[in-house]
Length: 315
Image 1 (cartoon, rainbow, N blue to C red):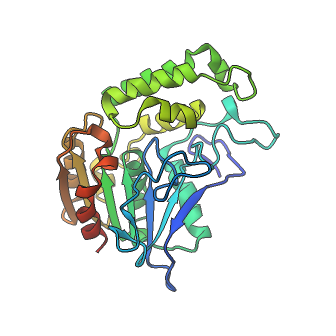
Image 2: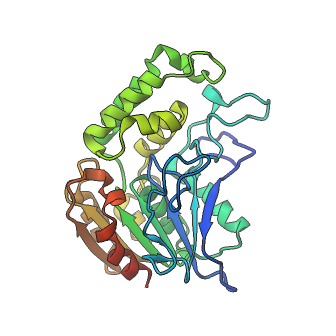
């Protein structure tokens, strides 16, 4: 595919997991888009390639909030990630890891890869697209650029564009990785030092000051440092209003029925960010606030409160 930067990337692999069965018309698809530290394993037990259970386990399955007796749920690993989809650690056409040669990605690039996945799965229109945090950024882009393909939209703990403060916060994490001597300019895959593990741990420690949630060692053990940078830069550059006349005009293009969800203690994307999104979209919006002490990562942990919200949003 041709990226927004003008560079080409390929061949591309998108890893995904699915639950439930596609109906005859293909109208029961739910696209689930994970946050920064997530992957395609949204539900199910731990196993090969997944050290822990699904990040929304208990919400996806027969009779649950996202009812797999009614819907087929598709959760892709984001382009640029490190859990099966093409990313910096993947093999380039010359047989070596992409490493420092991996091109920068935008949120819109990632969505276009997901659009191609939907084509391959023969899903012309999603019953719902659900995304939290970085996944919410992608979900918004789906509904803005492909409104005819999204019936319902659920946006959790996300933003229409990153603030200067968030971009600075992201940059601190990126520099923590790049300044680790073991980073080696991004070409560390075959080096005996094993890559910038100390820098990655520091980056996640910085993130936890705002995110809360997962312990730093969990992500250090399973996350690629280059992917961390690629995904963080994609989030920093996210602005739904770019080349669309501003945020309000862009969000005004959404035709789906929308649920916007905020977390009371979210310091990364505070509730006002979600209120602004809801206000710009207009009448077809339901706004919900979850009271949580878990900060930004409350959209992962507050499953009891999310159950009725998701049921109502999908109905």
